[in-house]
Length: 264
Image (cartoon, rainbow, N blue to C red; front, side):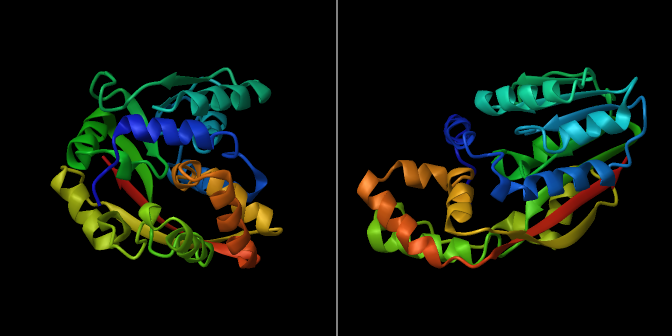
């Protein structure tokens, strides 16, 4: 699947920011904490978080490297950056900085960071090999790269229920979620990383489950994710019909994650 234009990604996630930190999306905090933990961060280290969103991995990273360490978070969606700054301020974290920036355009000296993190962001880059190579050269010797990608089956069974309803009500907006995504395959991910010059990458799978209190929780996930673009393209009546069709989503959905790790 071809990456979306970055201007569209920014617009979609700006719109989704109003639901991004809803309780039903607490899996982002879980995965962000796992990313920071797997980076084996130590006090005093300098960390870059690419596609940082609202700080799911950047904020626990800032706690881990405090007091002398520093974290920089980058994201192309300004509303996400605004939320991240508010979250950091609420915790009185003074060693973290969030910047509205595109990593592909951002400049840092080679060997600037002890760790680079990227939660569910690598699929957004049009030339992933070049982006990964840049991440790798920005790491110091002994630096760690930790990123995540979706494994097959994300948000199921809610995802299938949602897209079946979209196909019935607005077939022009339907996206076949059965299309294979190269970044959902651990073997292909390792090959992409190795081709980018990243030595001995490790890819680990976690099958996390997100509990839902009811249909409203599933709709919060729809509005707080990339599905927001589809919903926003509908009329109010069409949205209501799709939402009603999603009333049968069960009490938990799958969050299948691939953790990508390498040490320089």
